[in-house]
Image 1 (cartoon, rainbow, N blue to C red):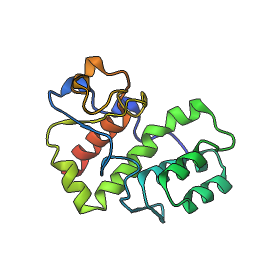
Image 2: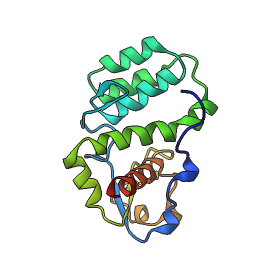
Image 3: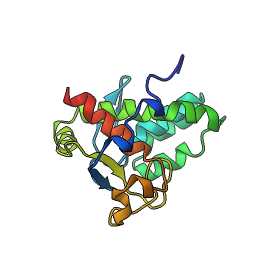
Image 4: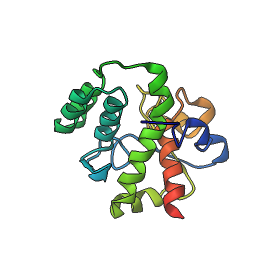
Length: 172
């Protein structure tokens, strides 16, 4: 990937601008949900597969990228992504939001049913309610009342903020 990312964390909506929140952990909003889409001339079965493929390609690990494309399930795709050669955290931190944003635009932009579900969340911010994820999620479970209160979040909710931005863009 050349140049600068098109979308960064600073471009994403802030939870302070919302009064309603839509927690999720599974289903169509999950990176692991089988919602096929095409991006850069390739077919991806899940958004997780796209993210791990793009991560491997970012670090020029072509063999790992091909393994990710051949992996049948998102758990295996993620395991391959955790083994990318030449991984650099600062580089990943610079690009990860843009990569997931591009995949989410493709996923929801190419699947009418998924887009309907995304738009049905209305003016709510999506919240990845994963108690073990403080980066992409809020570090809380969906049934925890604190998942409805950004001040109580333990994580940054990157995936929820990305999906909320994608919803706004695709609703236009």
